[in-house]
Length: 532
Image 1 (cartoon, helix red, strand yellow):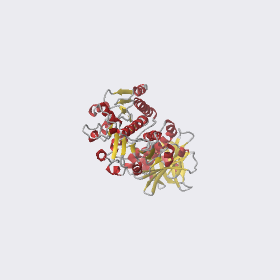
Image 2: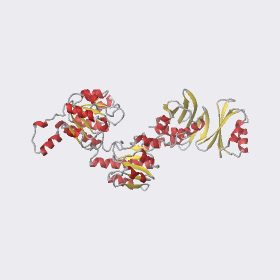
Image 3: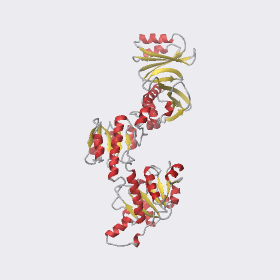
Image 4: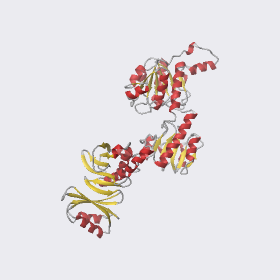
């Protein structure tokens, strides 16, 4: 497997890759322009980048074997995640590697802003001694507003509490209980932070909701004289509005490590303001962080390539090695259930309902199984290049709603999956599966609401017929006449003399003439062939 390291990472990360005999590792000596990068990607299965190399749609199209992109750092702004998802490429980052270093930088920026240290230093270097000019403010007793209480925001809050600050945090996933446990106060919305905070620090990702959220309107709702720190993403702050607020005194100061466009233009007005602290995107720039990120990206990519373990993926839920082993047996069963239903009811459903029962409902994660079911179902439609990464977005683009349920229902089997197809409120078809004896022996055990036993591989003839003598004999006779041998058989019925389902596993696929002869009997409603 070819691993291409596009941007510099720590030597330990390189050594980790090179220690695996399964990998052929190419390390670029410098960042290449896209035009020079494209010819190198023909057999690349994994790319490692930092912030320099742009992994665009065009780059991915030039890498037909690409399976994973690893970002040695948090932000994936330089990776077209949507294109990666559509092409089935996993995008992973290393959020833990620079948590502490970014939190520390944020707090140092906070202190520098409060005490005007950079301006005082510049004055001293210029030969001046202006003590009164650089009067600052204490942190103790002030309120710090934290926008985004994830890893980094939480670490900043811990340091602020140690300095005697009150911390008010807003995060859509921050509960009151967790906030209390961390010594913070949970705000109901950003406005609650704006009203209370003397200092505001940003630790949110760029989304349609957060892009430009710190703008003129937001500044007008903040306390006069507030100070802003941003070591997260430049796009969150509207820089023109910030310049105006800094110039008017509405915002007393700002400390920025990130910008809307990087590098910051030489003539940008932020460079001219005396109440601003600027650094050139140093959030992850420590020896320790680079070491951690380089080694971590090597570890997570190696685990994915060799075992399928998913960690820190931004476009696929993470599955650790232990969880993967638990769900692995269900993946084949789920894929075959989806494939069976697609072949019987191609392209007419608008809703798929998946039920996990028995021990299956106790699985720590079911998303990989749902993806396997969807993959089996959609591969038989008009969607090309379906895999477990892009399958949910493909289903959504087709208007196929996905519903999942963990059932308490007690049935005959210890663990089971049940998949139903709907069009509106009409139930079209359903199938269920379980394991016989061991996880290595999956079986489809219910179809058309009828108990059956269908192996999950081979050519299968499904015959719906009246439950009366002679049907099985006729099937055997017709198939023999057309040179088709029966490998195994399963029978099910809803009631004696009612409707029956005959399942025949065949050694070869019957042709149209054979199927027509079978269905010529008025007691046989349908005969369908599926390949599992």
